[in-house]
Structures are given as C-alpha cells and as structure tokens.
Picture 1 (cartoon, rainbow, N blue to C red):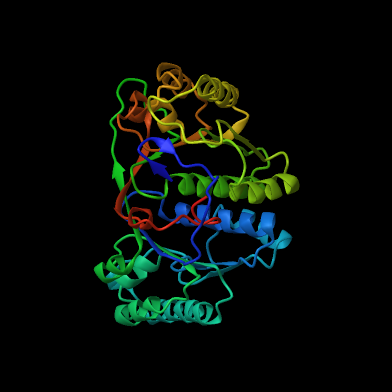
Picture 2 (cartoon, helix red, strand yellow; picture 1 turned 135 degrees about the horizontal axis):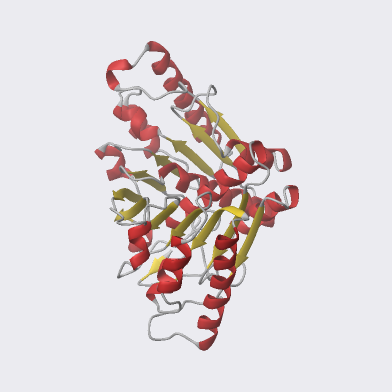
Length: 376
C-alpha cells in the first residue's frame, strides 16, 4: 500500500493474523480484478512458504454457461496446486435486472451462499472471495439481514472479500476496508483516440491488485485462446523480495514460459519525495526502457506498468516520453497503469478506462498491520 507517495515495500517487521472484511464497490472497472489479484497473492503465499493457506473463489451471477478470460489461468494453478484454490460459479451466464429475477436465480444465489456458509464454518480457507455478492444483495436474491449476521461471525483468521456494484449500507458499515471504484471519463481530441489504456489510481486499496487480476485474465486468454498473447508485468518502486504474487506468477511462467514475463525495479525501501537517491533514478529509467521497447515492439498484447504513476509523481521519470510511447503503441497492445499521484500526469487524458479507488475505510488507518498473501 502507499503512504503519501512513497511505496511501502514487502519488507515489514510484523504482519497481522486477524482477518478483515473487504468491500469493493462502485461504478468503475476493477472490482472483480482486485479480488483476482488477491487470489493470485494467496496462491503465491501457499506456493512459496507452504503455509496452511487456501482460497475459495465463489462467483455469483457468473454461471458456467459463459467463459471468462481468467478461467484458464486459474485452472492451470489448480492443476499445479490443487490444495490451494477452489472455484465455484453460480447463477445465469447473462446479465439481468430486478424485474427479470426468476426462481432459478434465487436458487442459484442460495446455493452459492450455502457454499459460503460451509466455507465459513469449516475454517479450511484463509481467504474467501464473494465475487458479485453486492449486486446479489441489491437484487434481493438473498436475505440481506441473514448475510450480515453470518458475516459478523466470520472466523478470526479468515479474510473475506466482497465485490460488485451497490454494496448495501449494512455491509459497508460492517467492513474493515471499503474501496469505492469511481470511473473517470476523458474526451481525447485529435488522433488521441487510441484505446487500450487503463489507469487505476486513487487513495483506496485495489490498484495493484486490479492490475494483477488483469494480468491473470490476460495470461488465461493466452492459455485458452491465443498462444501469442504475451503478458509483461513491470513493477516500479518494489525492489527486493517478499511479494507473494511472485511465486504464483513464476509458477505460470514455468508452465507457459512463452506467455508471461515479470520484472521488478527499485530499492527494497520506501522512496519519499525529497529523499530520492541516484539509484532510484537509475532503476526507474531501467524499467522504463524495457517498458518502452516492449510496448513499441508489439510483441506483448498486455503490458502492466504497476506503480508508474508515483514514479512519475516523484519525478524519477519524465512524462513526455511516456505520452509519446502511448500515442504510438500498437492498437492491439493493452497498457495498464497503476498507482496514486498528487498531480495527474498528462497521459491520463489518453486513457479509455480510468478508475479511481476512493478510500472510505482502510484498516491501516486504524493502525492494523498488513498481511502477506493479501496486501503484498
């Protein structure tokens, strides 16, 4: 996570053991992606430390009649590490409104919630993802009061993540973390309608995890649909070791070495404004040269530029070369940029998707420590 503009690295003296309830809602893109990013981290923790960690990805309103890009990557991780992840999908394969609710929809929602209650009671899982639970409650498919009462009794060590638009007030009040994802609209002029640029910024949690979720989707697309769909994950201000997603990404690389590349840059320390060191500029430029070449080459269909925004905000990189590279990128290349910043750089105007993570609650604000496999 971030404090000011400096990035808190994975080197922490302590971590919390008690689980928290996370809510991601709002109209912007990135809610389910953020949950997928946590899934990747949790699996990575289980791989690299062989801890007793296991995640249940329970997906409401996403029935088996429709395929999702990330499915193939999740299945690949399940094959390699079946003890670390379970996935259940319930509901219809298409969207519907309140006046289109059927008895089938209610049965499917209840089936999913019964599985969730079983997971809570069993205490087998360290992370329970309730993807699209919020709209299920908004549609009246489940008894809201019963869901709230059940979540109030969540096991102390379990992390629970609920996503989707329109989280009810009772749920956000109960939550330890609440990030509202708000969309921003940009109106590019001239030849700037290039498309394929997504930006995730703001003070709330979910920026890097959304990017990791996007990477999981892109890797899955490469596995299942297009073996030429290569993915590059570049991360600034996050040098050193200790990031749990690395093990899961490395496992996917071993199985599909032609599909994904991953690079970290920077010191294993927080970089504060006014305290930049020469190595910070060298590391930032090193990563940018790789990013520039990768984007321009067209070899990668998805390029993740994690924490590029604070790198620019700290003036470790100039803005104009980034703008020019994005303007000239191949149309088939998607670029995802993350990180908070005090002053939006000019390349924000090029984004066709811009989500701001607005922080309503964060357990770190209450002095609660971060947790491996969830926060880093």
